[in-house]
Length: 305
Image 1 (cartoon, rainbow, N blue to C red):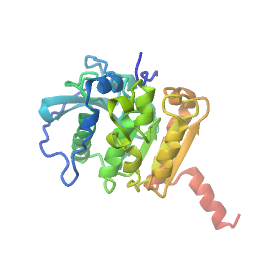
Image 2: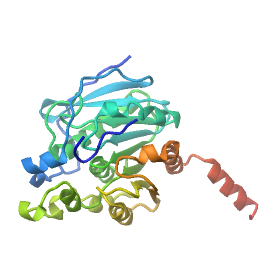
Image 3: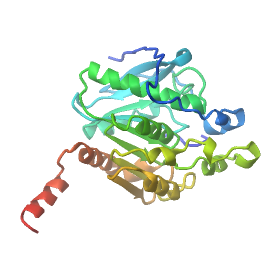
Image 4: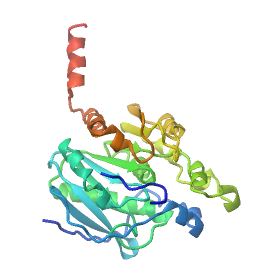
């Protein structure tokens, strides 16, 4: 597969809703300068798929976004009380690519919702940079209502991989007071270095960093616990981008974990079960769940070790 990412190795029902008022007090994201054919062709690599059979402990949720496009999501469920991760994947992936990955989150006691973009999987429409961000708000607001309506009471974390980091950071900045934390895998702080890697010439196109996703600026307003994961061998989005996200992040509790031997697309393959355990430990810490490490630390403190 060509493009920004190669896809990860590794009782169904539908819900339809049309939300006319998306953002409330939040402003519509406006990066329409990037909505040019040559840029969209480099940025998005959609793959179409019929709606596949869902794995055990999973079901599908279809969400209607403005102009009647439908976004497909797949919800892997652990427990009603468990934390939920709302996950936005990379630009060469689709929801069914996570059929073998979702169950690993369930084994860690986490609910996991993976969402497509317009034109990906069984989703309809065509993706642009503007709809990428605006749809993320529709999806978040829908899910944040759907969960309690179906008796899911756990906290919600936004997570984005690669291109999806733009969506996760967008939501974390907009709804900082409503989410419990942010997780970024192989994400980027600056848009123009990525544009160059994708074969674009920003100067010839007349675009600059102010026209991009502005992830570094947005993450500065995020104060909830943040975890950033990045492969040391990532040559598409360099480690320096992860370091900049970490440096700009406004959270007091923030972690940057660099995975040795991993490139842009192999963090799970290289990290294995440790990848999922790291995310679980981060969420436990963010939600105040006492882990064996925190118990040991408390034990030593109490005994003045």
